[in-house]
Amino acid sequence: MIPITVKLKIDKYQLELIRKSQLLLEAKHELKTMDGYRIIREQQSDEIKRLEEEIKLIRSKHVHEIAHMKSTYEKEIRQQRRSTDIKIAEIQRRANQDVEETLHARIISIAKENAELEDKIENIIQRKQKLHQLKQHLEDEQIHLIRHLKFVTDLRKINLNTASFNITNNSYKSIQY
Image (cartoon, rainbow, N blue to C red; front, side, top):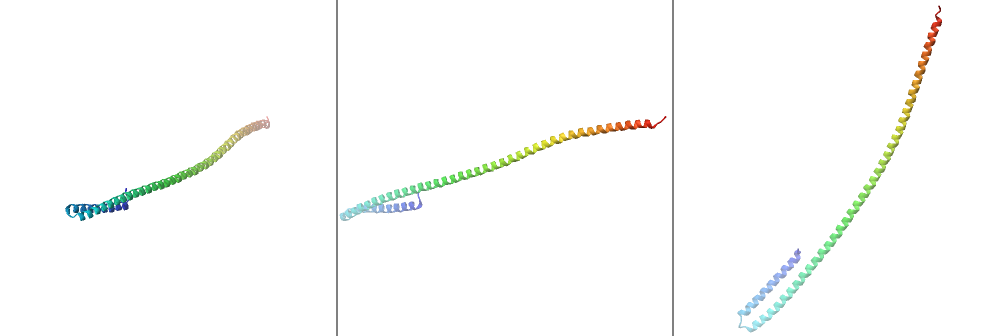
C-alpha cells in the first residue's frame, strides 16, 4: 500500500512525462510536415534531443525518487513492526508478571487458608479428644454412681430387713402369754 503523498508525486511526474512526451510527438510531427525547412528541422531535432534527454533525466529522477520513497516506506514499516514487536513483548512480559504475581498471591492465600484449616482441624481433634476423655470420665463416674447407688440401695434393703426383723422380734417380745 503506497502512501497518498507518494501516489500524488507519481501522478504529478507521470503528467509531466505525458506533457513532455506530447511535446516530443508534436515536435516530430512538425518535423515531418515541414520538410523544406531544414534549419527549423535541425532546431527541432536539437530540441527533440534535448527533450528526450530531459525525459530520460526526468524518468531517471522519477525512478530514483520512487525507489527512495519505496525504500523509506519499507524502512518505516520495518521500524513500526519492530516497535510493535517491542510493545507486544512488553505487554506479554507484563501480563506474565501479573499472572505470576497473581498466582503467587493466590498460592500464599491458599497456604494461609490451609494453615488456618489445619489449626481448626487440630483444635477440633483436641476438642474431640477432650470430649472423648470427658465422656469416658462421665461413663466411669456413672458406673461408679450406679455401683454406689446399688450399694446404698442394698444397704437400705439390709437396714430395712434388719429393722423389720427387729420390729418383728420386738413385737413377739412385747406379746406376753
